[in-house]
Image 1 (tube, rainbow, N blue to C red):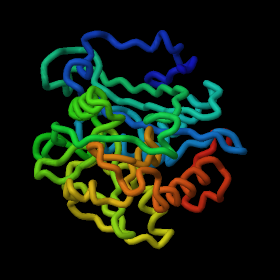
Image 2 (cartoon, rainbow, N blue to C red):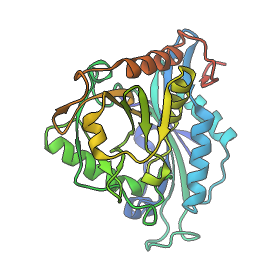
Image 3 (cartoon, rainbow, N blue to C red):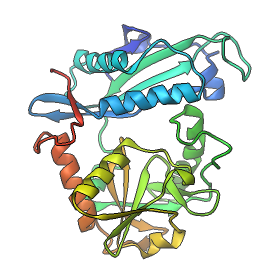
Length: 306
């Protein structure tokens, strides 16, 4: 469900009026950086999850992509909060995006195109399905590899990078799976089409690092901090494909996916074929904090109404 207002270059415009010219550089060449952020419904009103971490990552992405703009984290934090407030959301998905707009075609857009900054919000439920949080999802190993470290800026949430993710996701859906997992250039597990991955084997949690061309997800970091607080051993190392088949549990993390268990990989059942105890413990703390049922000991929530 869409919202009434969108923030565009410092002003609010109606949803239908937030248009971009067909000559926009980002439309032709993928020259954009964006974030996915959630605001959760709490007893104190809507609260944005890890707002500053998201806006800082957006700034980092724009710097890497050489997209000049006039905003800083403070101004974007304020604009995001006001957009959520103005649209009257109890909970929502938030998409700030900075991109090269119209001005000139050609790969070199610096100094030849105008920069645009938008913030849109919408009501969006569970990305991988309403039942996925408890029941898990069926996934496949994709035939498409994650981009090599020296081909794309994999740590940046850039629009052009998601062409790779689209192929992973479309292939999985065409083959009857909810999601796909990409291997890296060396054949080790990288991440899902839009999610980071955690593998639990014999009580130890394994997760790939930046060397596997993953996005260093903010929800991933949240899960890591929860696991550490629960005393679970974590190992950052290359993850072989067969470890997925051997695993007792697997779960995805991401702003859209939140914390979602994987019940099968390539039609091989994972563990008992349902959500496992480590995954459930992470979910319980994550959702208790984001719903306001548990004290926010990590200071992750920014309340829209102060």
